[in-house]
Length: 235
Image 1 (cartoon, rainbow, N blue to C red):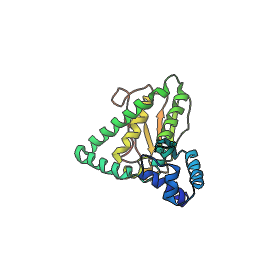
Image 2 (image 1 turned 90 degrees about the vertical axis):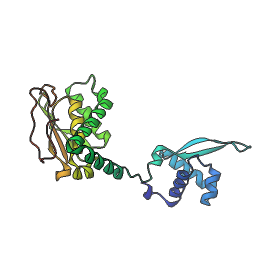
Image 3 (image 1 turned 120 degrees about the horizontal axis):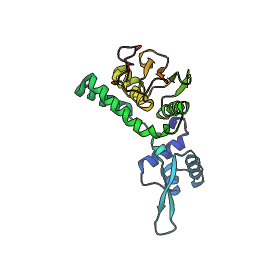
Image 4 (image 1 turned 120 degrees about the vertical axis):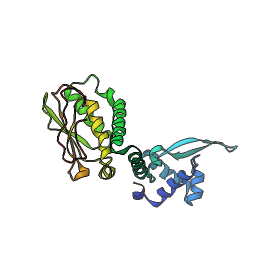
């Protein structure tokens, strides 16, 4: 988004990034060599888009002047190396704990996510819970929809975006996070039937809605076939 903006707005945002304490209209006018009216127009547009916000009042002995600063959304316009950090972290976990240990760590993260979202399913009927889970997946970034739902029978979640795609191709054990999140939210075993990290067009997760809620170690829970030996199974 940053690169699609005009040069003046980019320069204004970079100034605010460098001055976390905020800048006034006068400060920005002097730094950018444009009129205060032009600065105000840019600020108004950026504030409307949620990228800039009023910060505090600057007291210089005369009439206080409004300071403007980047909002959290504005800060996130600038490059962040989350994927690089995540790759280094996952590689280190794999080195320390091995494949089985890494899967356990990913399962734990999936359970923590479940604790974050579980309340959204409370008081909902079967269809409502499934739709709520699809909405949670979209919120997390998976671009998921509920498809092929048969009341009291089966349901499939289809995701067109994987937030862990590049990492999953390199370290497939991290897919355990997705499977554990779904299985703990729904309290049923999940079968992953397609995976984008292994050539699939999307990630698909199948659940037997009518099946009694069980854990993978409980009686009646069985492992399932997987499209790839590294990917899906009962969780």
